[in-house]
Image (tube, rainbow, N blue to C red; front, side, top):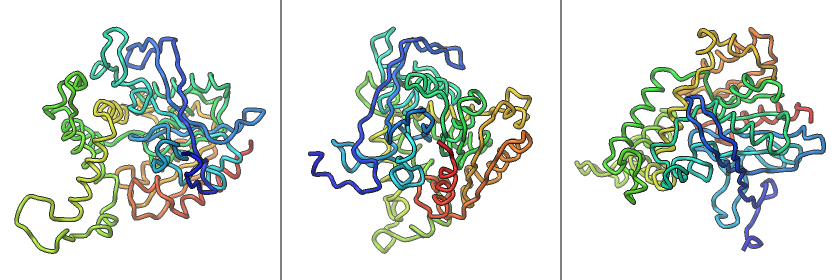
Amino acid sequence: MANDIAIPEDSVGIVSPLCARFDTPLTLKSGAVLPGFELMYETYGELNATRSNAVLVCPALSGHHHAAGIHADAPKNTGWWDNLIGPGKPLDTRRFFVIAVNNLGGCHGSTGPMSINPDTGKPWGADFPVVTVEDWVAAQALLADRLGIDCWAAIIGGSLGGMQAMSWSIHHPSRVRNALVIASAPKLTAQNIAFNEVARQAIITDPDFHGGHFYEHNTLPRRGLRLARMLGHITYQSDDLMAEKFGRRLREGGRKFSFEVEFEVESYLRYQGDKFAGSFDANTYLLATRALDYFDPAHDAGGDLAAAFAPATADFLLVSFSTDWRFAPSRSREIVDALMRNGRNVSYAEIESSAGHDSFLLDDPHYHAVLRAYFDNITV
Protein backbone atom coordinates (compact mmCIF):
# COMPACT_ATOMS: atom_id res chain seq x y z
CA MET A 1 0.00 0.00 0.00
CA ALA A 2 1.18 3.54 -0.78
CA ASN A 3 0.54 4.58 2.83
CA ASP A 4 3.15 2.09 4.00
CA ILE A 5 5.94 3.56 1.85
CA ALA A 6 8.47 5.65 3.77
CA ILE A 7 9.00 8.86 1.81
CA PRO A 8 11.97 11.16 2.60
CA GLU A 9 11.10 14.80 3.29
CA ASP A 10 13.13 16.00 0.32
CA SER A 11 11.47 13.58 -2.13
CA VAL A 12 8.77 14.56 -4.61
CA GLY A 13 7.03 11.47 -3.24
CA ILE A 14 4.86 9.03 -5.13
CA VAL A 15 4.54 9.94 -8.78
CA SER A 16 2.65 8.50 -11.72
CA PRO A 17 3.67 8.58 -15.37
CA LEU A 18 1.50 10.50 -17.81
CA CYS A 19 0.96 9.91 -21.53
CA ALA A 20 0.43 12.53 -24.22
CA ARG A 21 -0.98 11.31 -27.54
CA PHE A 22 -0.33 13.27 -30.73
CA ASP A 23 -2.31 12.32 -33.83
CA THR A 24 -0.71 14.87 -36.17
CA PRO A 25 2.00 13.33 -38.39
CA LEU A 26 5.56 14.23 -37.42
CA THR A 27 8.15 14.54 -40.18
CA LEU A 28 11.58 13.51 -38.94
CA LYS A 29 14.93 14.89 -40.02
CA SER A 30 15.49 11.77 -42.14
CA GLY A 31 12.33 12.53 -44.12
CA ALA A 32 10.44 9.64 -42.55
CA VAL A 33 7.00 10.44 -41.18
CA LEU A 34 5.46 9.12 -37.97
CA PRO A 35 1.67 9.09 -38.44
CA GLY A 36 1.21 9.82 -34.74
CA PHE A 37 3.03 9.15 -31.50
CA GLU A 38 2.87 9.06 -27.74
CA LEU A 39 5.25 10.56 -25.20
CA MET A 40 5.49 9.39 -21.61
CA TYR A 41 6.39 12.04 -19.04
CA GLU A 42 6.27 12.85 -15.35
CA THR A 43 5.80 16.17 -13.57
CA TYR A 44 7.02 17.35 -10.17
CA GLY A 45 5.96 20.52 -8.37
CA GLU A 46 3.27 22.92 -9.54
CA LEU A 47 3.06 25.21 -12.56
CA ASN A 48 2.65 28.80 -11.37
CA ALA A 49 -0.08 31.17 -12.53
CA THR A 50 2.11 32.83 -15.15
CA ARG A 51 3.50 29.48 -16.39
CA SER A 52 7.00 30.87 -15.99
CA ASN A 53 8.55 28.27 -13.68
CA ALA A 54 8.65 25.19 -15.93
CA VAL A 55 11.90 23.23 -16.24
CA LEU A 56 12.44 20.47 -18.80
CA VAL A 57 14.69 17.54 -17.88
CA CYS A 58 16.14 15.87 -20.99
CA PRO A 59 17.27 12.26 -20.56
CA ALA A 60 20.67 10.79 -21.31
CA LEU A 61 21.13 7.64 -23.40
CA SER A 62 19.48 5.19 -21.00
CA GLY A 63 17.37 7.80 -19.23
CA HIS A 64 13.59 8.12 -19.32
CA HIS A 65 10.67 9.99 -17.81
CA HIS A 66 11.05 8.63 -14.27
CA ALA A 67 13.61 11.16 -13.07
CA ALA A 68 12.48 11.70 -9.47
CA GLY A 69 10.31 10.23 -6.74
CA ILE A 70 8.98 6.70 -6.57
CA HIS A 71 6.18 4.69 -8.13
CA ALA A 72 3.61 3.24 -5.76
CA ASP A 73 3.88 -0.20 -7.38
CA ALA A 74 7.70 -0.17 -7.33
CA PRO A 75 8.86 1.78 -4.26
CA LYS A 76 12.51 0.77 -4.75
CA ASN A 77 12.55 2.22 -8.27
CA THR A 78 13.72 5.73 -7.43
CA GLY A 79 13.99 8.26 -10.24
CA TRP A 80 17.36 8.36 -11.99
CA TRP A 81 18.05 12.00 -11.03
CA ASP A 82 16.28 11.94 -7.67
CA ASN A 83 19.33 13.37 -5.88
CA LEU A 84 18.90 16.57 -7.92
CA ILE A 85 15.12 17.06 -8.08
CA GLY A 86 12.85 17.65 -5.10
CA PRO A 87 11.89 20.05 -2.32
CA GLY A 88 15.07 21.69 -0.99
CA LYS A 89 17.26 20.02 -3.62
CA PRO A 90 19.23 21.96 -6.27
CA LEU A 91 16.26 21.78 -8.66
CA ASP A 92 13.77 22.74 -6.00
CA THR A 93 10.21 21.63 -6.75
CA ARG A 94 8.87 24.18 -4.26
CA ARG A 95 9.85 26.82 -6.86
CA PHE A 96 9.88 24.97 -10.16
CA PHE A 97 7.47 22.82 -12.13
CA VAL A 98 9.65 20.05 -13.51
CA ILE A 99 8.85 17.87 -16.50
CA ALA A 100 10.87 14.77 -17.40
CA VAL A 101 10.20 13.04 -20.70
CA ASN A 102 10.84 9.69 -22.35
CA ASN A 103 11.84 10.43 -25.94
CA LEU A 104 10.63 9.01 -29.23
CA GLY A 105 12.20 5.63 -29.87
CA GLY A 106 12.33 4.90 -26.16
CA CYS A 107 11.39 1.68 -24.46
CA HIS A 108 9.53 2.98 -21.44
CA GLY A 109 6.15 3.78 -22.95
CA SER A 110 6.84 6.42 -25.60
CA THR A 111 6.35 5.38 -29.21
CA GLY A 112 9.32 3.33 -30.29
CA PRO A 113 10.44 0.01 -31.77
CA MET A 114 8.34 -1.97 -29.31
CA SER A 115 5.18 -0.08 -30.30
CA ILE A 116 2.75 -1.36 -32.92
CA ASN A 117 3.34 -0.13 -36.44
CA PRO A 118 -0.16 0.87 -37.66
CA ASP A 119 0.73 -0.21 -41.21
CA THR A 120 1.57 -3.80 -40.26
CA GLY A 121 -0.15 -4.46 -36.94
CA LYS A 122 3.19 -5.75 -35.64
CA PRO A 123 5.89 -4.12 -33.49
CA TRP A 124 7.96 -1.58 -35.43
CA GLY A 125 11.21 -3.33 -34.59
CA ALA A 126 13.97 -2.38 -37.02
CA ASP A 127 11.44 -0.53 -39.19
CA PHE A 128 11.14 2.27 -36.65
CA PRO A 129 12.77 5.30 -38.28
CA VAL A 130 16.10 6.65 -37.12
CA VAL A 131 15.55 9.64 -34.85
CA THR A 132 17.82 12.58 -34.09
CA VAL A 133 18.25 15.01 -31.22
CA GLU A 134 16.40 17.56 -33.34
CA ASP A 135 13.47 15.15 -33.73
CA TRP A 136 13.30 14.69 -29.97
CA VAL A 137 13.25 18.44 -29.45
CA ALA A 138 10.47 18.82 -32.03
CA ALA A 139 8.37 16.27 -30.13
CA GLN A 140 9.17 17.90 -26.80
CA ALA A 141 8.04 21.25 -28.23
CA LEU A 142 4.68 19.71 -29.10
CA LEU A 143 4.41 18.45 -25.53
CA ALA A 144 5.17 21.96 -24.24
CA ASP A 145 2.43 23.32 -26.50
CA ARG A 146 0.01 20.74 -25.12
CA LEU A 147 0.86 21.79 -21.56
CA GLY A 148 0.58 25.49 -22.33
CA ILE A 149 4.26 26.22 -21.71
CA ASP A 150 5.41 28.94 -24.10
CA CYS A 151 8.87 29.38 -22.59
CA TRP A 152 10.94 27.17 -20.30
CA ALA A 153 12.53 28.78 -17.27
CA ALA A 154 15.30 26.27 -17.88
CA ILE A 155 16.18 23.14 -19.79
CA ILE A 156 18.71 20.81 -18.22
CA GLY A 157 20.35 17.62 -19.42
CA GLY A 158 23.49 15.57 -18.93
CA SER A 159 25.45 13.95 -21.77
CA LEU A 160 22.92 13.26 -24.56
CA GLY A 161 20.45 15.31 -22.52
CA GLY A 162 22.79 18.28 -22.72
CA MET A 163 22.74 17.98 -26.50
CA GLN A 164 18.96 18.33 -26.38
CA ALA A 165 19.28 21.47 -24.25
CA MET A 166 21.67 22.94 -26.83
CA SER A 167 19.35 22.03 -29.69
CA TRP A 168 16.43 23.73 -27.94
CA SER A 169 18.46 26.93 -27.57
CA ILE A 170 19.30 26.93 -31.29
CA HIS A 171 16.00 25.84 -32.83
CA HIS A 172 13.55 27.40 -30.34
CA PRO A 173 15.51 30.35 -28.92
CA SER A 174 12.44 32.29 -27.77
CA ARG A 175 11.25 29.33 -25.71
CA VAL A 176 14.33 28.86 -23.50
CA ARG A 177 15.52 31.32 -20.84
CA ASN A 178 18.28 29.14 -19.41
CA ALA A 179 20.10 26.09 -20.76
CA LEU A 180 22.10 23.87 -18.40
CA VAL A 181 24.44 21.62 -20.36
CA ILE A 182 26.12 19.01 -18.15
CA ALA A 183 28.97 16.67 -19.17
CA SER A 184 28.20 17.08 -22.84
CA ALA A 185 29.86 17.95 -26.16
CA PRO A 186 29.08 19.86 -29.36
CA LYS A 187 29.60 16.62 -31.32
CA LEU A 188 31.15 13.21 -30.80
CA THR A 189 34.79 12.52 -31.49
CA ALA A 190 35.73 9.73 -33.89
CA GLN A 191 36.68 7.63 -30.87
CA ASN A 192 33.23 8.08 -29.33
CA ILE A 193 31.54 7.12 -32.59
CA ALA A 194 33.79 4.06 -32.67
CA PHE A 195 32.71 3.01 -29.17
CA ASN A 196 29.08 3.32 -30.25
CA GLU A 197 29.67 1.24 -33.37
CA VAL A 198 31.31 -1.59 -31.42
CA ALA A 199 28.32 -1.58 -29.04
CA ARG A 200 25.87 -1.68 -31.95
CA GLN A 201 27.75 -4.50 -33.64
CA ALA A 202 27.59 -6.53 -30.43
CA ILE A 203 23.79 -6.25 -30.63
CA ILE A 204 23.35 -6.61 -34.40
CA THR A 205 25.52 -9.74 -34.61
CA ASP A 206 23.73 -11.47 -31.72
CA PRO A 207 21.97 -14.51 -33.28
CA ASP A 208 18.83 -13.60 -31.34
CA PHE A 209 18.64 -10.11 -32.92
CA HIS A 210 16.88 -11.35 -36.08
CA GLY A 211 17.50 -8.15 -37.98
CA GLY A 212 15.78 -6.13 -35.26
CA HIS A 213 12.53 -8.13 -35.41
CA PHE A 214 13.30 -10.35 -32.43
CA TYR A 215 9.92 -9.58 -30.82
CA GLU A 216 8.25 -11.77 -33.45
CA HIS A 217 10.62 -14.61 -32.55
CA ASN A 218 9.83 -14.38 -28.82
CA THR A 219 13.47 -13.85 -27.99
CA LEU A 220 15.84 -11.08 -26.93
CA PRO A 221 19.42 -10.33 -28.01
CA ARG A 222 20.53 -10.36 -24.38
CA ARG A 223 24.15 -11.31 -25.11
CA GLY A 224 24.67 -8.42 -27.48
CA LEU A 225 22.94 -5.85 -25.30
CA ARG A 226 24.87 -7.14 -22.30
CA LEU A 227 28.19 -6.67 -24.09
CA ALA A 228 27.15 -3.22 -25.32
CA ARG A 229 26.36 -2.13 -21.78
CA MET A 230 29.58 -3.57 -20.39
CA LEU A 231 31.59 -1.64 -22.97
CA GLY A 232 29.65 1.55 -22.31
CA HIS A 233 29.98 1.21 -18.57
CA ILE A 234 33.76 1.04 -18.83
CA THR A 235 33.81 4.32 -20.74
CA TYR A 236 31.46 6.07 -18.31
CA GLN A 237 33.85 5.58 -15.39
CA SER A 238 37.39 6.73 -14.81
CA ASP A 239 40.42 4.52 -14.36
CA ASP A 240 40.96 6.03 -10.92
CA LEU A 241 37.43 5.16 -9.79
CA MET A 242 37.65 1.60 -11.06
CA ALA A 243 41.02 1.19 -9.36
CA GLU A 244 39.53 2.49 -6.12
CA LYS A 245 36.41 0.31 -6.31
CA PHE A 246 37.97 -2.91 -7.60
CA GLY A 247 41.71 -2.73 -8.15
CA ARG A 248 42.95 -6.16 -9.12
CA ARG A 249 41.08 -7.88 -6.32
CA LEU A 250 40.08 -11.49 -6.88
CA ARG A 251 36.64 -12.63 -5.78
CA GLU A 252 37.87 -15.74 -3.98
CA GLY A 253 41.40 -14.77 -3.13
CA GLY A 254 43.26 -17.03 -5.55
CA ARG A 255 43.67 -17.62 -9.25
CA LYS A 256 41.68 -20.41 -10.86
CA PHE A 257 43.54 -20.34 -14.17
CA SER A 258 40.25 -20.27 -16.07
CA PHE A 259 38.04 -17.90 -18.02
CA GLU A 260 35.34 -17.80 -15.38
CA VAL A 261 34.72 -14.66 -13.33
CA GLU A 262 37.77 -14.20 -11.11
CA PHE A 263 38.34 -10.45 -10.72
CA GLU A 264 35.81 -8.31 -8.89
CA VAL A 265 35.65 -5.88 -11.79
CA GLU A 266 34.57 -8.74 -14.06
CA SER A 267 31.75 -9.64 -11.70
CA TYR A 268 30.64 -6.01 -11.55
CA LEU A 269 30.56 -5.60 -15.32
CA ARG A 270 28.61 -8.80 -15.81
CA TYR A 271 26.09 -7.73 -13.19
CA GLN A 272 25.62 -4.33 -14.86
CA GLY A 273 25.31 -5.97 -18.27
CA ASP A 274 22.73 -8.51 -17.13
CA LYS A 275 20.71 -5.87 -15.28
CA PHE A 276 20.60 -3.59 -18.31
CA ALA A 277 19.81 -6.38 -20.78
CA GLY A 278 16.80 -7.30 -18.69
CA SER A 279 15.29 -3.82 -18.69
CA PHE A 280 16.28 -2.04 -21.93
CA ASP A 281 15.34 -2.57 -25.56
CA ALA A 282 18.11 -3.39 -28.03
CA ASN A 283 16.55 -1.39 -30.89
CA THR A 284 16.21 1.62 -28.62
CA TYR A 285 19.91 1.34 -27.79
CA LEU A 286 20.76 1.37 -31.49
CA LEU A 287 18.58 4.45 -32.07
CA ALA A 288 19.97 6.39 -29.11
CA THR A 289 23.61 5.77 -29.98
CA ARG A 290 23.00 6.80 -33.60
CA ALA A 291 21.30 10.00 -32.39
CA LEU A 292 24.48 10.69 -30.43
CA ASP A 293 26.59 10.12 -33.55
CA TYR A 294 24.52 12.46 -35.71
CA PHE A 295 24.39 15.41 -33.33
CA ASP A 296 26.53 18.20 -34.78
CA PRO A 297 24.88 21.66 -34.82
CA ALA A 298 27.89 23.14 -36.60
CA HIS A 299 27.41 20.82 -39.58
CA ASP A 300 24.83 23.07 -41.21
CA ALA A 301 26.86 26.17 -40.35
CA GLY A 302 29.96 25.31 -42.34
CA GLY A 303 31.60 23.72 -39.32
CA ASP A 304 31.45 26.99 -37.35
CA LEU A 305 30.05 26.27 -33.89
CA ALA A 306 29.71 29.96 -33.04
CA ALA A 307 27.62 30.48 -36.18
CA ALA A 308 25.47 27.49 -35.19
CA PHE A 309 24.77 29.11 -31.79
CA ALA A 310 24.04 32.53 -33.28
CA PRO A 311 20.23 32.17 -32.92
CA ALA A 312 20.47 31.30 -29.20
CA THR A 313 19.33 33.94 -26.70
CA ALA A 314 19.33 31.89 -23.48
CA ASP A 315 21.74 32.20 -20.59
CA PHE A 316 23.91 29.10 -20.18
CA LEU A 317 25.52 27.00 -17.49
CA LEU A 318 28.14 24.50 -18.66
CA VAL A 319 29.46 21.88 -16.23
CA SER A 320 32.21 19.35 -16.91
CA PHE A 321 34.09 16.83 -14.77
CA SER A 322 37.85 16.47 -14.50
CA THR A 323 38.04 12.71 -15.10
CA ASP A 324 35.34 12.49 -17.77
CA TRP A 325 37.44 11.25 -20.68
CA ARG A 326 34.48 10.43 -22.90
CA PHE A 327 33.06 13.99 -22.74
CA ALA A 328 36.17 15.81 -21.60
CA PRO A 329 36.17 19.33 -20.12
CA SER A 330 37.79 20.61 -23.32
CA ARG A 331 34.57 19.77 -25.18
CA SER A 332 32.51 21.90 -22.80
CA ARG A 333 35.01 24.72 -23.21
CA GLU A 334 34.42 24.58 -26.99
CA ILE A 335 30.76 25.34 -26.32
CA VAL A 336 31.64 28.10 -23.85
CA ASP A 337 33.92 29.72 -26.43
CA ALA A 338 31.26 29.56 -29.17
CA LEU A 339 28.66 31.12 -26.88
CA MET A 340 30.99 33.88 -25.71
CA ARG A 341 31.78 34.75 -29.32
CA ASN A 342 28.04 35.42 -29.63
CA GLY A 343 27.96 37.60 -26.55
CA ARG A 344 25.86 35.19 -24.54
CA ASN A 345 25.81 35.07 -20.74
CA VAL A 346 27.75 31.91 -19.89
CA SER A 347 28.76 30.35 -16.58
CA TYR A 348 31.20 27.44 -16.55
CA ALA A 349 32.34 25.05 -13.82
CA GLU A 350 34.81 22.20 -14.06
CA ILE A 351 34.24 19.88 -11.12
CA GLU A 352 37.03 17.80 -9.63
CA SER A 353 35.63 14.30 -9.50
CA SER A 354 37.06 10.79 -9.64
CA ALA A 355 33.87 9.25 -11.07
CA GLY A 356 34.32 9.96 -14.79
CA HIS A 357 31.35 10.61 -17.06
CA ASP A 358 28.88 9.19 -14.53
CA SER A 359 29.70 12.12 -12.24
CA PHE A 360 26.72 14.05 -13.59
CA LEU A 361 24.39 11.49 -12.00
CA LEU A 362 26.00 11.58 -8.56
CA ASP A 363 25.41 13.67 -5.45
CA ASP A 364 28.71 15.54 -5.50
CA PRO A 365 28.59 18.49 -3.04
CA HIS A 366 30.55 20.94 -5.27
CA TYR A 367 28.58 19.98 -8.38
CA HIS A 368 25.22 20.31 -6.64
CA ALA A 369 26.26 23.61 -5.06
CA VAL A 370 26.94 24.98 -8.56
CA LEU A 371 23.54 23.83 -9.81
CA ARG A 372 21.76 25.13 -6.71
CA ALA A 373 23.37 28.56 -7.06
CA TYR A 374 22.40 28.78 -10.71
CA PHE A 375 18.78 27.70 -10.17
CA ASP A 376 18.46 30.05 -7.18
CA ASN A 377 19.26 32.97 -9.48
CA ILE A 378 16.60 32.12 -12.05
CA THR A 379 13.67 34.49 -11.72
CA VAL A 380 10.26 32.86 -11.97
